[in-house]
Image 1 (tube, rainbow, N blue to C red):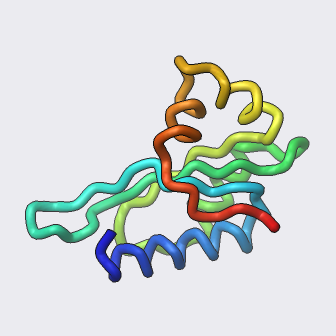
Image 2: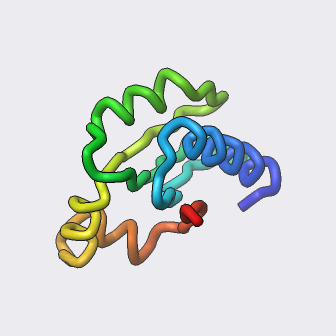
Length: 105
């Protein structure tokens, strides 16, 4: 990942961690144009049970200003644990192919 891309995505991950106190954040995908410039990316965020993922997604979209399109997919921990072992699920693909950028300590 280019240094500027890495800094931008790291900043978004830090802001997301502040807003929703997640367990994990994964980089699912990123897109670059023919010049190699970042044109968008997608993060998967695993949050505590009892918090509405759709409300958290809305909070992230409204609370984070990103100069390129950024998408968030949010799972509760229970749903994540259930789906990340199903090799037909999106969570499984993220768990096994995404780049883990944040883990709660």
